Image (cartoon, rainbow, N blue to C red; front, top):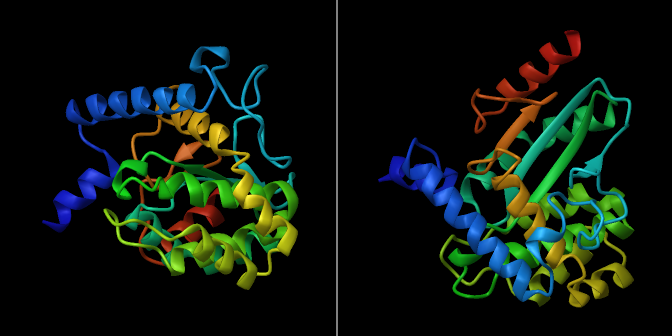
Length: 239
């Protein structure tokens, strides 16, 4: 049963995975249109006509943390409802934070919302990702603290997720300024998150979360045990 849940959350496997990913893209396009955007206006975040993105987002749509000239670029595609993303965070957060602080890693987070349908209609993935995007826009130095807090209190997949008030409280406890917390309610970056999700599962080649890339190459080692990712980053730095 555990293996079946893992396969579902990561949307892996030939044939069926491709079909599911295609359906997800179609759903996201519908969400974008419902939010007032049109999927055909721009293929990628940051392109002309694309939804408003956080001030500190890369052209590809990542929330970038760390030195721009760091020797290793670590991309992490995640969904705040995904239990395997929570496992990844708990195993690797301390080491990733250390590597970013040391200037070894430039961390690029892609907050996705493909598990919105697994939160009893509350769109938890989008709401949590919007909070992170808002913090990235106005208080970038607090993104990792909020990311950690959201996973420390991660709701069960299939439930209603955390309330807006609870997300706001976690952000405040993580040191996010109150004016930034208040801005969560504007839902400014929800269309951007929908477009980012569409792009990730389309031209971005993502088939599930967490997806981790080191200098552009997918990391295929153990994501859920401390050590292997650090070793791979160290090797990439040496290379």
